[in-house]
Length: 171
Image 1: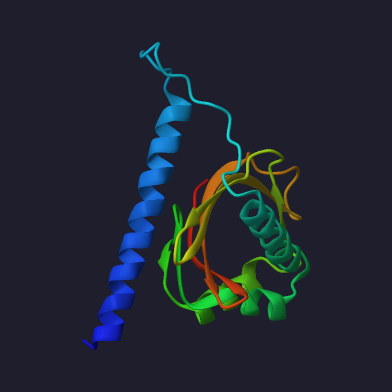
Image 2: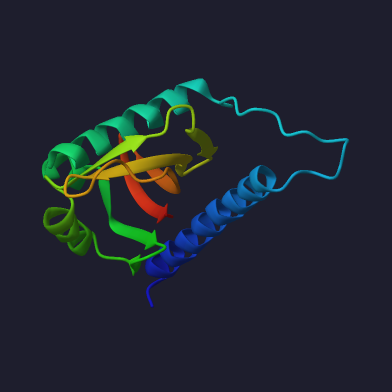
């Protein structure tokens, strides 16, 4: 294995581990009442408001394209080394397969709505940002929207370009 390839694998594992660790601690804090009366979690406030606004804007652009089938935008915002973890469909590590799946199953059939007030963004120094939130989906063949579900998205900044590199989608 080439050194660059090994570094990329290690970076992927570390970034995913960080996201999972942060997600697990957030989920634990939100789902179990604390028996420790000394600590009450504070409501989320962005540590970096500019980064928060940037990721919120990119999320809006990405899912605006998702909702309208604009594959050119989806393609430009998706990393070649995308890892997509889905609690029903499993792991996908192919950008081409992901785009084909969107074409087949999503465009013109499903829309996504971000749950208002659920977005949290944290900087990953030297890499980009991790985004947590809740969203729901509407399948035009079914009545109503899905219940809001959790997601984690890791965005990498290369120069001035942001790209989605890792996604954990839960239902």
